[in-house]
Figure 1 (spheres, rainbow, N blue to C red):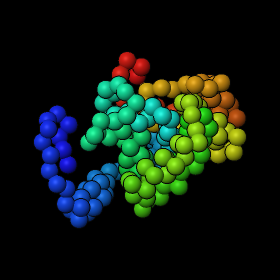
Figure 2 (cartoon, helix red, strand yellow):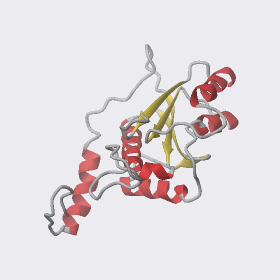
Figure 3 (tube, rainbow, N blue to C red):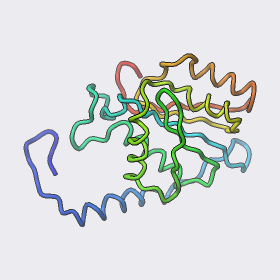
Length: 193
């Protein structure tokens, strides 16, 4: 390992690293209560949309540049961790999609590891460019998938397509679910957020 602000370094003991990282990640989920739809006991139908465009490789602190500093989580790694957090802590009906210029399904389960989730996103990212945050909603509309909430996880860029997220949501509400909502989570805080 190494420090990002100094020249100190140390040897990583692989057996500890391979045990500690997955274990501590899994331990984070014990105190979470699942979300329900307001004023009901009904679990929401949720569609998580993870931006896998090139800019998601930047660090989560929004420090600029197109690649995270050593030891820093990238925006897409943070998005994967957040998505797996929701997947593991709720029995809600959830679907996960990756998007850039189009949307594609991510097969996240309650047993998907962080490393597996990152690899799924990286594999898909080689085939996509752009940042069209409406793609998950448009894909759900095209496939007549019913959701109560769309969660879009992006670095801070939201629109590079033919239709904006609010316009896609309006169309989805008109044709599928009039009560559907969208939450956009920005993983990088900089002047575009």
